[in-house]
Image (cartoon, rainbow, N blue to C red; front, side):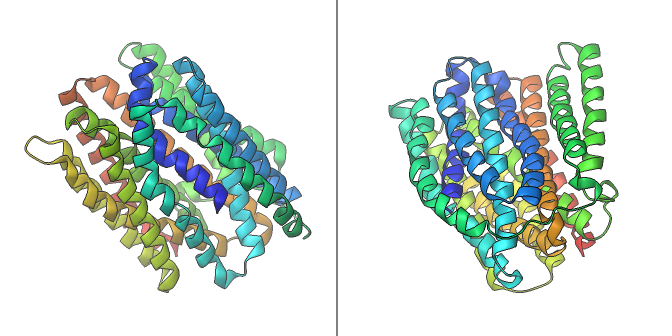
Length: 433
């Protein structure tokens, strides 16, 4: 929980200070890519850590992830250019991807089935303190000391987490691992597929971002990226996932639908409020705070109220859909920007209620020797959905323009697209049965 708290502080903080980072490093056109770099690197490491956990156990990939995450934070704080900052975000993504997948495997192997919903709810609860103070603290530090200290401040907190984790992981790693024998348990093939997926996503986003300036070359680049992405997903996801086959395949895809809809809008809320409604960083962070608090409340409630999983997922997706449609109003003339606060409480509740149910359901539908592969597939769906939607949102912002009125238009267009994605999840939820 302490490690998740540290990752949560980063997740809640970076969005608040990104407008300042983009301004100082002259990288507003890379606003979306800075988030996508984290997610694409995390996507690659999801697969590697899942295979690693299935074959050798979860302790080493978990500790490796924590160390890489801390190194990426230090590198981000020291970044003197947009390119270096993108590299730092990728290193953070490698660390976060390894730690989260190993954590899912840990829960599946340490806790009995009936306790897992509470374990996943506890992880969501680890977001409460970062949600309450993270955005506000990050905004205050960014306004008074500079954005670099937002990254530097988290690095020392990793030390007590490592000191406490090492003996606990030794105690929990004595059980025998049983590697799977299916096609998604082959290390070389899965590493190639992960590379194709991450590389394809990067090429696709880079091509989309350059379409306006270099139409032919960018279109070719995007087409190659899309082909690599399709190949990688075919190999990494459970059979039938791309056809929304009932059960586990659609359960795993639902994670991507939820994450793409929520995080694309969540990423651009601070930029929209600061640029259009003239909020300062501290005020803009309040909307993110309320969203995370709603997430924790939704996750807690799903652990206390039994019910059919597909109905829970449908309810969560419906909450996200309605909330996005309300939130896009916050940049319109005559509408207060503070409308984003109640809207994002409900959106966060829908995410906590729905996405935690997805995690529990996917682990219940997974054989023991495929828990690592399916944990990785969940994270691949999650990270890829977020990376693509944020990258596309950033490309739309670049095409429409960076003046306040243009940013407002870009935010409305992006939010409308993401509401459609969330509505699709509402319609498809029944296929998780």
